[in-house]
Image 1: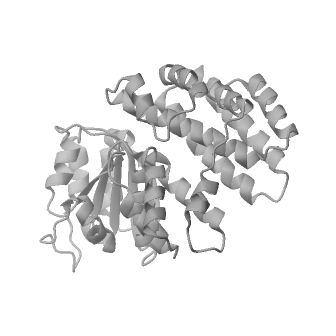
Image 2: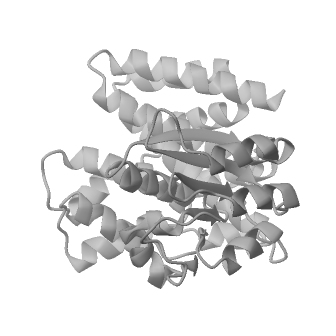
Image 3: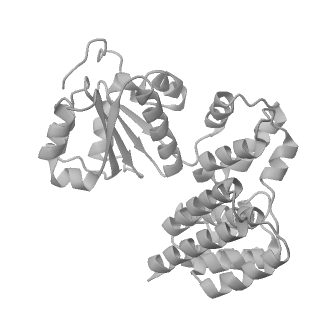
Length: 351
């Protein structure tokens, strides 16, 4: 492995626990490569972007994204990418996505020969087994870092850091409520925080009233029908429910916010069931309690809607809310267009 001056292997990050995150992010470039893994892909994405921002704020990087499986099939090309000096940029940043448990000998050779003077590597993975050779490699490496990202982890540090970076003040009660609101579905933490900032506008003091308004939910039956139509990929049902709501002057952003709440609850239930929890126990664990009219429908969707589809729907709904809020044109037209696109995507997945 090539070493840069000032990057001593004696400063070992190895497995970065919560208590060491601040130290890691004070200088992520010092480790040369990092493995981000776990069941909280939003946190992985958040950390990835933070590393990119920190690295590119000081030096010019070219960014290359490639799937881990592709790199495994062509390790020679990865070896070249990691060990040579870029022609048109100071450094290169390689992001290997969707990594698996196994680290092949050829791929290990490529990563071993990473030229840390000119290249930085981020490896993204979902949950890795305790016997994973990839996980073991990064956990035991003298210089590289490994960060576990799990939904069950406390999110207080991430929330506090985000608010501090954006100079938002708050009291203890407000902070505790915000963390509690985000904890049950922290797959959505980054877009939720960004939308909260958008809601505040120029205001920089966060209150409980702000949280109540920003996280408000509505239980109009037609709003339930919207969620069912999206999950089922039923465009006709969506049009019928959307027409009823929009004709009654219900704002598009409020409709989206209600849909987000439904799918955040569904995501939480799916996650609990996937971890071995009984569905009835999972339903009872939701705080605040699920509105009684939604229980049967949520149970049905737990058994019929794939977890990956729920993640897609949530991401697209968050994007739609921001676009509708920022749109200078008709929010209704923007909302319909974005939801049509989402429902068509759901239909394609269900085929």
